[in-house]
Image 1 (cartoon, rainbow, N blue to C red):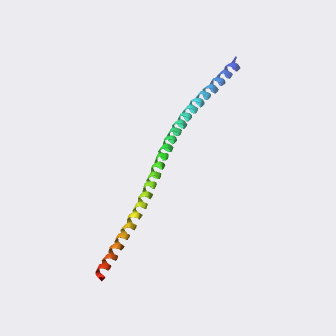
Image 2: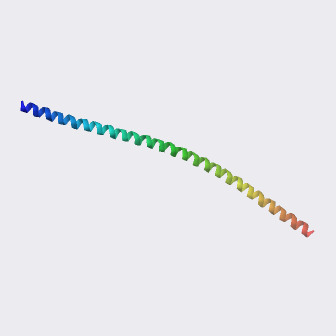
Length: 91
């Protein structure tokens, strides 16, 4: 009878350890789920920022091209004005 009682106590002890392990596993799984959700949100934010940066780069390059045209036109007008001024001062 003592042998049976001792074995039942061992089984009970092992079941308690198993129960603790299962509860720890559940907590670890919950943490992993939370971290995965957090990483997913960060990925979405990063994708959104990447889209915004690309849009800003596109707008910036468009403005740069427009400023180049304005600058060239300004130099053209200045050169024409200096040419006309020198033509009228000569004559």
